[in-house]
Amino acid sequence: MSEMGKATYMLLAAQMEPRLFDLDFQLLADAVLTLIAVIALFFFLSYFLFNPARDFMNRRREKIKNELDEAKKSQEEAEALKAQYEDKLKNIDKEAESILSEARKKALDNEASIVAKAKEEAHSIVERAGIEAEQEKLRVKDDVKKEMINVASAVAKKAVGNSMDVNVQERLVDETLKEIGEGTWLS
Image (tube, rainbow, N blue to C red):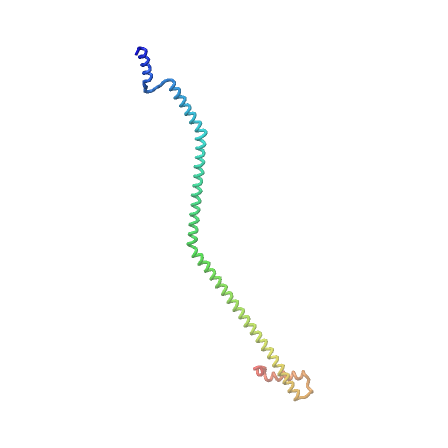
């Protein structure tokens, strides 16, 4: 190998030799451009992708939180209603007993009212019957009196004759009745 070949070979070997950090200008420029591109891409994606996704996630989080709050509120209301219904179920026997008690009381009041009306009606019937009996007694008394007058007048007519008129006959019958007494002929 010639000297030139040796030198070229060395140069090539030196260039091919691995370096710990291959820091040359081109590498630094590529790294800076890559870093700028990554930062630009980050801001671009952040503005157009991450922020909307973040907003969407925040809205979703708020919606879920509101739904959970509503569910919790509904559950509390349901538990309150359940407790209220359980109390009603516990007191249903008492309510039924009070309703039955009131119904019994009303029935007894109605019964007492009906009995009082029946007694009052029976009393008025007895009174009317007593009044009617008294009236019938007076009517019979008058009928008997008239019959006695007719009989006495017929007897007197035969005894005295035709000379006596009706007024005289009635006066004589009344005097006779007074002498005998009204109690005698009524009994």
